[in-house]
Length: 177
Image (cartoon, rainbow, N blue to C red; front, top):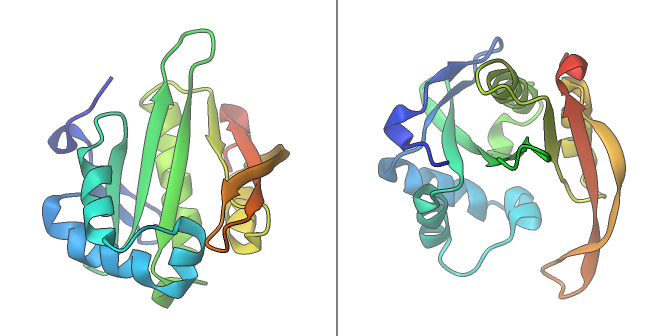
């Protein structure tokens, strides 16, 4: 199931985060955020981050939102769905400009999207998979109600060429805070 960006609703968080369908005009701002050391550490990427962001927007299986705060693009949040009725769930990925870290915007954005996926799309379970040593992301997701499920050993290759663990977390609809 693919949802055209224009068909995605704009979502408003309770702490000022606005999630709106990402557009081609957002690519430079999102690529610049991805290029910051604090974000690139976790999201990595090749030499052309603008092409990678544009690729995210073109992916028919992923719904991509730009996160705005006070009229400025400050990050990206996206979701995908497993539609097999026996395993149905949605997954979330997010990054935020380090200039706005510590304001609760990540929590606001994740909570806003989680509520939308549960209430408007009928998902009973959501997953997210931060790096196991990304303490700030894990704390953010816990505030929304995500719980650790287990460590995904040697889950992703880091910029150093070595394999690093990930943490699988999930949230059931009743756990949303």
